[in-house]
Image (cartoon, rainbow, N blue to C red):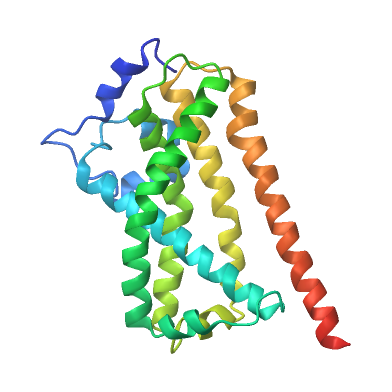
Length: 235
């Protein structure tokens, strides 16, 4: 149940010496299957090393998403060149670039994404929500899909010769990862309900319904591009 004082509830996220990592396997399983307990538990979620790691993974994920979009634009004829991606396609250089740019993207996500998360909390009925607490829920719930995507690309690193070959690999396992963004939305919703006084239906709209709709629209546009490209290629 949400507390009356968002600021006092933030103390539950403060690190303590005796607390274990929130990223340990059994804690990560709680994030997946018992998000209310995860976000209500004392796992030292605000401990700086864990926050930096989770934010960095979030940043790297979005850098890779940008590279994927650029490759898709090339594949569908919307872009005439992929020279930059070809330059960084070898795995050592790829991970160096993604790691460096991911650190920058992490700062942007923490500030801008966290601000948007707080704004939606206000629109859901939370009064003066603690910004850092909101950002922690935002980052840790997002870790569900950002870490799964990163793990998949790491796995591809040992299977394919470079990043472009990995992108072009028609691996059916990739479709399994489509569920994780929805999983993260639901986890974040439960984290919010556990820590803030919000309207249930408003929170469901701002943190589940609207993000799901935007994700599905984006996915539908992606499928449409691929279908149009396939039609042009066949003609």
